[in-house]
Length: 138
Ligand code: SF4
Image 1 (spheres, helix red, strand yellow):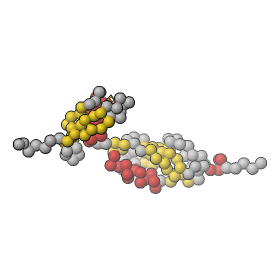
Image 2: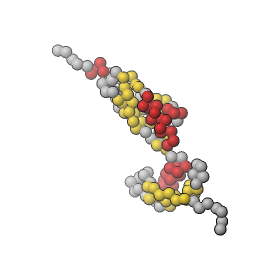
Image 3: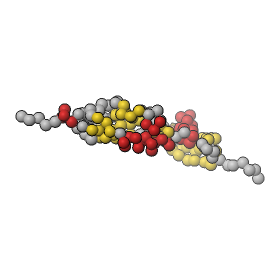
Image 4: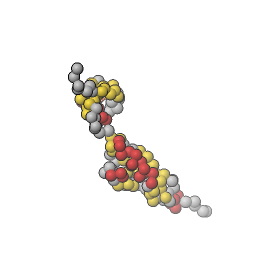
């Protein structure tokens, strides 16, 4: 009997397009894990997706940042690029601590390089200054 380790097999859905292929991925259990073979894909993008998910999983974040002095207390935000999965918690923590000053415009950079990821946190909603929408007295 050989002492070689058998690869483990992971099964997951490819979400790159609506076909939703069921991927079976043979993985060598090293750290970080390495993809040995991908089956079940209908196109090469499935292989790229499987390798990325196993060897360097990335995620985009959509969340909200508190706004001081705005007509609304929160502005929705997102990362400008996918970040490593292991950095999500640290980035979310910085987003949670961030307070932006109104007005906030879509595309404003509210955080630079959170958790050392190199990404930027961009506003995806306008929040006007409170005074601009104040009561009118007649
Ligand atoms: S493997 Fe290709 S065809 Fe299948 S879901 Fe992924 S991108 Fe779509």
